[in-house]
Length: 421
Image (cartoon, rainbow, N blue to C red):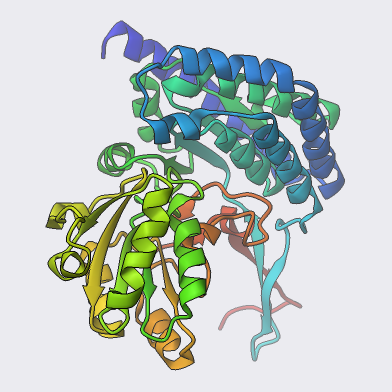
């Protein structure tokens, strides 16, 4: 290791040891204290809005060459700060997930078995560009009794530090340890490496960002990882779709915010309706600045569309670009998704309940949606108050990760003098 890496490792170890001590206190903290911390942090966010916006402006000024989609993810506005504060208050209103009896049963020998929810411990959160993730992750970890170490991207360091100050104010007001929510004080990549090697100090790593970040975490981590893969989401317009509904849903799914992981990246449309509907859909999107990549069957209907390559169908655009393929029904649509998708979120638009059931049952993706925008794949929209990420792996949690998914469990066994023969 060089000197910078050594210093990053020392900083991480100190933060993680403080986080473990804080996590032990937080796991036993009563709900009123946790809820008070969240409400006070929300108040502090609102009061600090001018300072947060100034920090965000400095971050944006320091990175003038960002893409439009990346800049949108990095940008904070008064409305987005208010959304962060409201999210903290919504999490405060949710039931405390810690200590829930998940199951209880009695054995023939009279032993009572109880499965009880408990915090995971110390969470390491590595994220890129979106500074609001700091508030969402801190709120969910705090309410679920976990300590968290946040490491944002170098582009958002000032914004994240300003948001963290509000979270620390909330913890102080509630008498909870400030080390329960910490932020990396350095942009050195060595700090990320130290987090990934911190087995025994960090219990779970959650990466939230682009493919490069997630790939690095999965390859280097010596700590369990809750994977958040890229959001290569599809909207499939079935032959029995209502045309007006299809137009409205696709427009929202693609262009509401192009830089979020729930944005639709590929349109699949049934051959039976494509000649009449596809030109209308293309015109709707083109009018709002969208570009396209289309397969041969789509280009036969709309010859002006650029040709798509296989690489295009495997690309998470995070921009105003839509890939288009014409398919012959539900089974080919599912085959396309299995080949090119990332098992994040897929939607079907149809008035045929049987086709919708076939589609939803045939998906391996974390979230399947019928007659609504893929951008509803969001913790707040699921009623979780916020999300710490969208899990696309097969273990522990899938889809938006909220309070319940940040808990593990233990067993209590209650006897009346039994001994094992």
